[in-house]
Length: 193
Image (tube, rainbow, N blue to C red; front, side):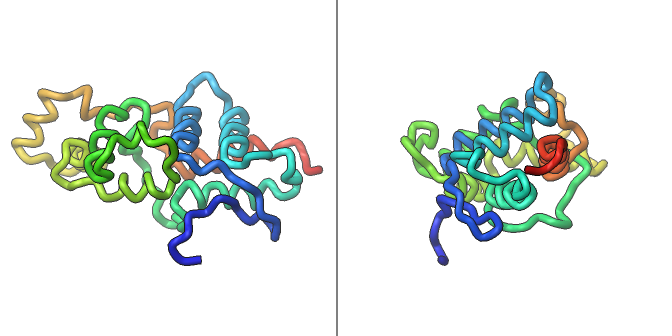
């Protein structure tokens, strides 16, 4: 229904309850950045963190469950065709830039909220002020990733703030969707029940 925040996902005609707090999804992203976790571990984290009881989902339905979970994480819309060959941010590294920008849009410290639906958080995240420091850093990263020339004042900022403007990631040149797909493939290997 229009305007409703989902609390469950339909997988092959069956509704499964999901965890919807934004901190839960950020935990999944944190797992993606962990170089000590295998792709199979990361896939398990994704599925186990989204669904409240992964054991209730038959293994034969993992593909549909995975697709539903990814669609939920992406805000409910399919992202086919929006892949990039570069990564613009790292949730762990950029936490101190992201939260002040999101807080400004939300009008409160979101980390203090007892509960906030992931889609609500995504809405705030997607509406960060274009003049905010976070948006400025992202624009520099995007220009550099695309090989575009920086303005003089952008170069000066970059030179003075290299660490802030750099992006380190264990996923490197993969999009989040590619990483999710690899993790899912690792999870579903081993046959179906």
